[in-house]
Image (cartoon, rainbow, N blue to C red; front, top):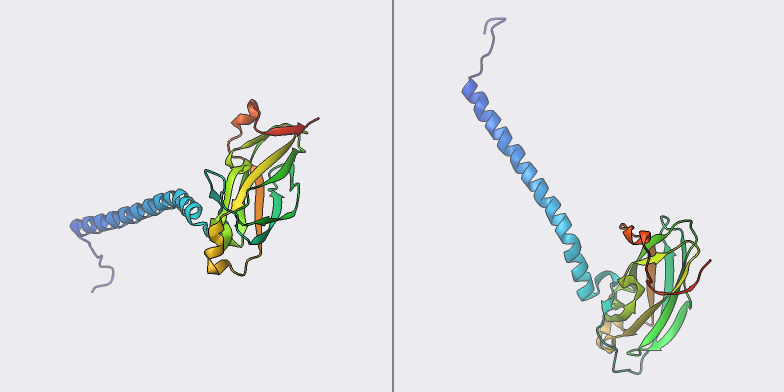
Length: 207
């Protein structure tokens, strides 16, 4: 080829290449949006899976109290933590107790707003060991609803619970003698209830 000669490309060839690139980009975008949609959809599905199976230490919600108590004792420990974005103190009124499997029991936690603004808080929870989660049943719990505390306000919050007697039939739990129920309070994403705080629980003290 002579020096300085130019190479020409047919416009039709460029058009075909452009269409191929556009199709490729469109496919990549579709896959990306599809994966994003699946990610959002997987959150409630995963939460439902955890609640049904107890996977990851998720407790169960019982519609009625236990009617059977068996001859097996378990220690229950209570842990409490507060996320750094929430100016509250939060702790169990008792750190540990002993129960019979199937026995209906009450535990109390106390939260206090040590900040300068009314805040809506919400509690996340889990049970350890995780394999015991599917047998830890809660009848009533402050984690079911958001809690609103004014500055200086203190709130006692009950947890009504029992261990399902079917726990004793699960050979994977033969080695379990202690179950820990843990809660972490954090600032709720929706703070609208803080503008008109209602009676959300048994407030026992306040400044």
